[in-house]
Image (cartoon, rainbow, N blue to C red):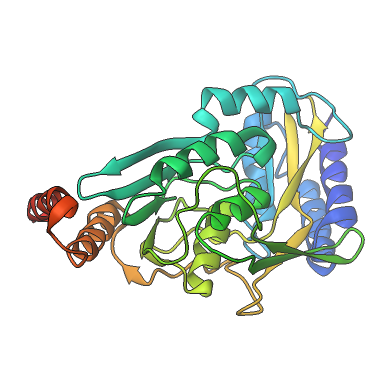
Length: 317
């Protein structure tokens, strides 16, 4: 397929699916003009993808809007460039997106996630992680390197941190002109962390999409404090469509609408409650968690925990 056919395919996907039809029209005009100028002539697939992505993001800076190059040939599944079984195998090799779930000294829980795979894939692993951490006195949720994922997994995770069902996000979809509400679940497998113990969410510039949904939603609910740096700024959920053997285009067909603010984090990112460099977010949040632990007493069974907390806090300097 030559570059003209590829650009027309991308333009068709934009006109049919992009959540902002007016921007889709502007992009169509712009991409065709760039094609006429010879901007894409003679480029290999990878360079072509980079050039088109830069142009796709030039109008409104939507980071979910991309032409992607893949080394392996893309399958065609239900009109999308998406192999569900391969995605499941990828999840298994990546511990279902959970990089770490452990008790830190001082009985502070730590959950590090890299991607929110759907509950049908990652639900059991997430339930196991949250059950493990349920009896800790405070929780750090590290999404500094989480690039996003399934909003229903965000709902599942938040459900472990609240007692009653709560509406935390909505997504407007252009296809069908509908708005879907996202609520926490009335029941979760395993044991909840609960609504009363403190939570800090660690963020950074790589935090994106679904991980921003988690950060922003917990922040607006008043359920957690965010610690770190401003996030990537991608609030428009997307789908991917095959363009050629090694190319697909990701097109946002919806936009998030927070029930508290009436808006989202698109283009601006999630602003942290406690602003520090992303590299310093762990130490800052851990220190706050340890200080909380030391308010819970140091006699009886809590003596060992309090001793751990003091040593760990001193070690942070």
